[in-house]
Length: 554
Image 1 (cartoon, rainbow, N blue to C red):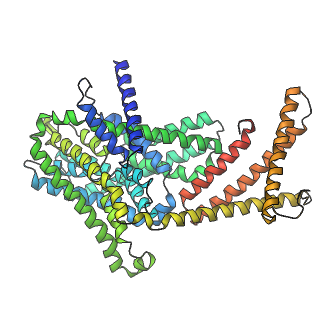
Image 2 (cartoon, rainbow, N blue to C red):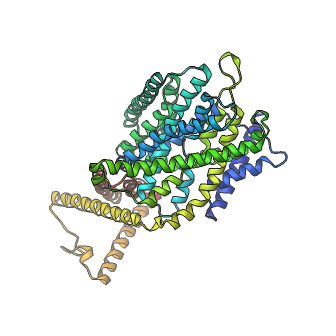
Image 3 (tube, rainbow, N blue to C red):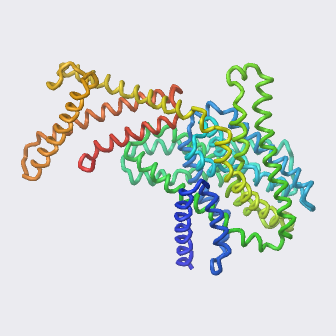
């Protein structure tokens, strides 16, 4: 039995790799290919029906995916756009839950209020994976992407808290608005507190470790260390994971070594790719089980309900974004001065990106089978069916039209990426000056001796032909030094002159790299550059430091 499950898993991973490779050759985002691939596999004779087990998805998929998103989150951009992000992640999620519940209760015969609120909470969160896939190919404005990423990170937690409250109300058939609001606050704050506490302990531990395999293992276990205890005591495990990810992401540049940081980045990129791929293809594979669910009812009415609810989701998102963006600034002059009206094109893009993902289907599948007294949960199969078709329709409708919409709105020509490149260039300039200042301080400490090749003349001040000659001389000297060092090793000489000189050079280079890193971190802490810019520069510094650590492998 276990061997059969492993074979199925390997087959799904092969399908993920093939479909993502195919998507790279087209303009279609890979989540769309994966869901369509899952649909196609579901109807192939002999392919077993694979049911998504909610408890497995919530425990195995959700913590690492959220942790990877949050640890790489551009926190500086989040702070700048905090009002917009929380308006969408909290206000819009709760508004969507209420509006969808009202529409479903009025539209669907026999849909009780508790079941309608469960459906609203299931459909409330958005998934930005497909949007990010498109944004990586096109120049989507930085502010729009920061808002979308921040919304996707937080709205999962808020929607799941609302979902849990709706499930409790449906199962117990009792709900109090005041008590529910207090419970919502307690569950949210409890999750944040657990995340901060576990994050502090993990940071304390990692400061004392200098073993890359052990540190990578701890990084892999960290999201589960935050999620499991929070979920066990009844607070938000999702908010706990998001909190610890943001906390450790901020500390990462000063917490771990360059070697571990490079390894962890690759490890988490691979894990996120595999888990997202499996989640989307498994979503498509559910079609057979959903269509065969007798309690769902005839397919025609279900598709009709789905169409109305999709229009509702799109409408409430557009209304919420444009009203909150323009009305608040019209009513609050101070806000308008600090943050002028955003371009309508950016608001339109953010409004159109309300794509639903696998989390909505997993939440629907996790609905209990019975309520108080052993009565079947009302409309459970119908809620699952509607959730699946909403995910499929939004992926196809909005996911496929995103590239066209971005070009139509000319958002890839707003100049934000040119400004980001200029920001990065200026940050690298500050880092280079910091390294040179440190180098001059070290030279002054040793008597201010200069190179015999060009005393008193900087390399940039030389004519082009002499500059090239000087660089060639530098390269030749490095290779001659390497030749002497390895020749001495082959001959078995005991003279450590070359080894000592090479080690002194590496120590000096590390000192200068640390000066560069400190300068860039200061720019980030002062809010003069974004976290994304910091990470790009930091990666180059980490690679340089790793080459110094392992000169033979450089």
